[in-house]
Image 1: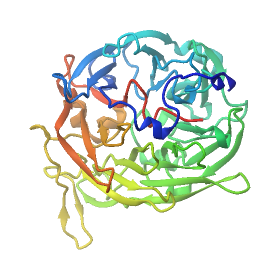
Image 2 (image 1 turned 45 degrees about the vertical axis):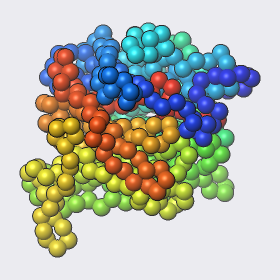
Image 3 (image 1 turned 60 degrees about the vertical axis):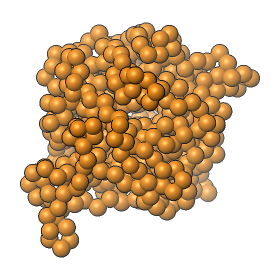
Length: 474
């Protein structure tokens, strides 16, 4: 890890608080999916104009289609980030786009023309399989060494016990697996590392053979979904501890440490049980966990189950570690919590931007006194909001939260068929960083339903200069 200890100024920022002083975002890159929509078109990377002074504000200004059909672009990460800030030879130039279903990993050049990125390289699934046995790539993070680490959720047949971590070098060649032999986690999904504590922790979605077919509650009972956090020594990849989150921690998805690299605590969003679980280091070096925030399921009518979970599918932490934001994809709300005391989060903001329980829906929730009710969801620029809030991204200064509404095409089709038919949209939430509070911006609406090749599904968002879910400080 010594490469980035050189003197000089590399990519990103010296600290999370320095990053908050960075320039306002003018562009945002969004992964857009046609796989699973019935259109025989390749997925693509959209460039969206987020500069309010621009004539093309809140419009898609460029589309980079990938060469193949059926990839399912999903998450994205950088070849280099603030973990390499000390290395003047490093540069944040390439956006890494793992394809969840095909196993391809696309490398996109965003530096030559930031408004019109171009394809630089394709890492083929056959190469990854031959050298590592890994498939279903998901999360990618750059390392201070210049390498890139990618979590892979299974083997080629979709078995979870074939999952692990793929290591690419700075030229995007397959180096092998990162973890030591025999130290793969029970399930794969997301991960975050905190080098000062010599620790990486990964989370658990499920077996690709199960989740790629849509969500089946029986598969949870059958043990095809995860409820564990895997604690690794960093950077050497030894599995030190497996934390079983139990029935309060089903489907732990996105995981983040606090941004301050000296801190030894973080959170994971447990989707099915709709809990934010906090993990923390004990004095003996082991790790523990506790439920920090719990969203109760709602009693509902006219739905597939008598109770509806919120389904926390994404969350993030502001760069000053003051606020935590998460979405309830099914209920339809975005929440803001003050986490200045991480063990006692306080709800400070909430806004409804969709969901299955909005007025006009056939589904209603039943209040404690037996009344049927639904949530008010405003229109934006004359558009009725579809689906539920899914991926979120925060501006560096913490004042704007962007949100898209596609989770994964097979699950979109199951829970929000209108999003498959009409496409995604992207919204902006204005954030009160002084007192807390969220409000829907009425002047920003990116409609992926009116794309040239037909309605598409928008997922993860990245700024050219990095953000609070891509950059890690060492």
